[in-house]
Image (cartoon, rainbow, N blue to C red; front, side, top):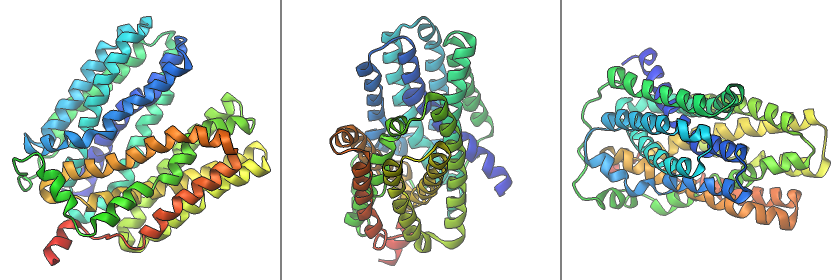
Amino acid sequence: MSPVREAPWVATTYFGEGLPYSIVHQVSAELFTHFGASLAAVGYTSLYGLAWNTKFLWSPFVDMYGKRRGWVVATQIALGLVVLALAAPADRGDLGVVAWGLIAVSIFAATQDIAVDGFYLDALPKERQAAYSGLRVAAFRGAMLVGKGGLVMLAGLAGGWRWAFLTAAAMMLLLGVGHALFLPRPGQPPRAGSSYGQAFATYLRQPKVGLVLAFILTFRAGDALMFAMSAPFLKDLGLDLTQRGFLSTWGTAVSIAGSVLGGVVVSRLGLERTLLPITILQSAAIPLYAWLAWARPGFWVIFGVVLVEQFVAYTGSAAFMIFLMRRCGAAYRASHFAIGSALMSLITTGAGTVSGLVAQRVGFMTFFLLAFAASIPGVILSMFVPTSRIDDERAQA
């Protein structure tokens, strides 16, 4: 298949990943806030992330039963139908029904992630998987912008949430039907075993597994702490809601550019040559926030620093996705990628949980210096983790 035909489905499948993620993590918080839910209730929406944290527990079933293409289509149609069913209760502010419905959305969305990631590895030749990693992240971030910006704005313009949910449902249903018709049909990958535990056992038997797991758990630790406190920090610097919204929009655009650049650089130069310098750049950008906390400059200086950090961070995200892909064995691609990405999300959830308490105790400048310190282990480990494909390593063993 030519790159001209590959890029569209890579973009649409990862847009399909990002939209329900935005509904669960961003749109839900806006909806609950709109209807006067308590701060505690709004905070509880972060618990929907548990579906992504634990998706590795059911990922072997995606490998063992059916084809990943079929799972992609089925989960997208299911998501469209559930979001459609939530349009009326969301419009009238029935938060109990919406809360339970979003549990279903989160489970279907996490399952879709497993299938899409596995399908990506099935359908693309190994030599082109890295080239599209930036497009994957860019499409996902674009969908989040549609959710956080477009759907929320639509709810405001329409005077209610019905049209926002109807629009989201229509997009997911169109994606499901379109992918059923046009998504490529790759050859059958090596068949996964019938044992549920085999997916985990094969992942843990990879070369240098201790280094791999430690790197996954530390690569985003500093960024996870920093991002969790970004909104209250910017508010503390004196930015009003309009300025923060303006900055968020530009930050998303720059993060998309960073994602694409990261994928292109790693594809052309190789992960083995680029992982360390990209990890160093990602870590080195964090102290810029400590400087902001100390200097408290004007808006446009803050604007520039945030854009630089967003660009570097998402360049790192693209490289990290390539690393996770190379840790996937042929027979368990969906499961292995789910294990790696779930471990990454666990550290993000954990860092977000403690970030507020730490920042409140030590102040923002010290907090961001601690975030920088938390990023150092990932830099060190990037010098030692294996960067070749896991199947190639096993063949040479």
